[in-house]
Image 1 (cartoon, rainbow, N blue to C red):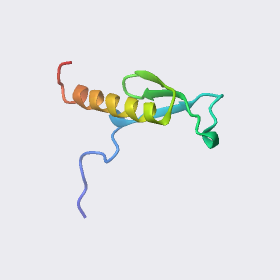
Image 2 (tube, helix red, strand yellow):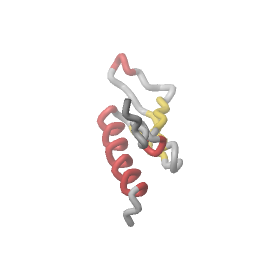
Image 3 (cartoon, rainbow, N blue to C red):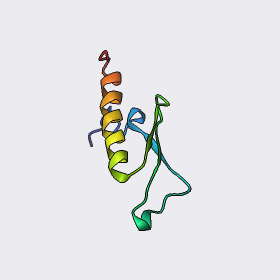
Image 4 (cartoon, rainbow, N blue to C red):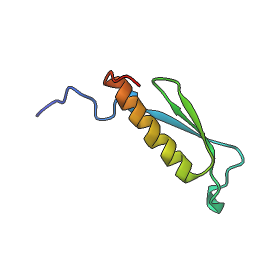
Length: 71
């Protein structure tokens, strides 16, 4: 058996999605806040498309930060 030294799901790639109390996914209405666990950064989103855009943008930033890249 081979043990990997790097976690498959590292905490630096962890997020919390908080849905707003007024969202209604069954009617196609979703909104809330995305929070990056390691840094505390948070972003508001008002649609599923915005949620994905926030996640992709911040994940890129989080990976750059963990690799020591300057912004």
